[in-house]
Length: 283
Image 1 (cartoon, rainbow, N blue to C red):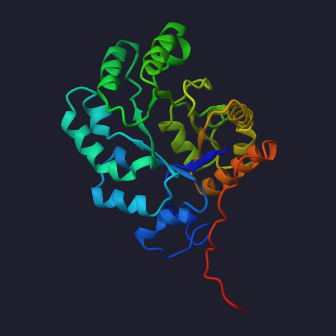
Image 2 (cartoon, helix red, strand yellow; image 1 turned 180 degrees about the horizontal axis):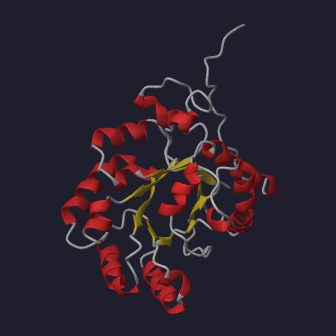
């Protein structure tokens, strides 16, 4: 039984020398991260499609069962809004091919303006995608969370192609006013939508955003510890990504989430032992 956990990135300045060895060459950073977590969000592909050689490096640094949830390019989802972007999509799919089984799901993150009236476009887009990948869709229009008919229509489209609905849980962030610059920035940028926890497939994906306070972050994820434990008992294979506004402790927190679930389900496989931040010596 495996639970996959990870962060929004695999390299972050506050982690260097604290959680991860420093300095590390670019070709070693993901490998080091993968001793802490067994999944990562592929957010960089949203802004630019990587070269194939770059993706080959990602594959070399990770085991075949490591999970990438790779975001489709912004030009496809936000620029073209899923129509008329065949060339951009083809280039993206060719670039990520070296990931092989590590490409756990291709992540279609849609803008907040993409609403129920656009569901026909989404349905057509998902049906045209190659069947060799799994897909996960993140929506931010409030109607999908507040209007039962819109929710059912979206669920039906996703279920029809075996795609998952990715919730981005920001409830903890918005429970009380921000107390840091990073939290204030997150308040202006992150979606404020109700929490959703219904899995459509056997591989649910959760994005959880806490606070810069470790205590408040942990308090806010109790709901997900319960939910993920239940999914594992049902035979599902979830992936959980832990965010905080500054992400300074996210790497450690992702492991802590895994440990809390494993405390309830000891049969969950442990994560690997993180490599030391400094070389081991004899004395």
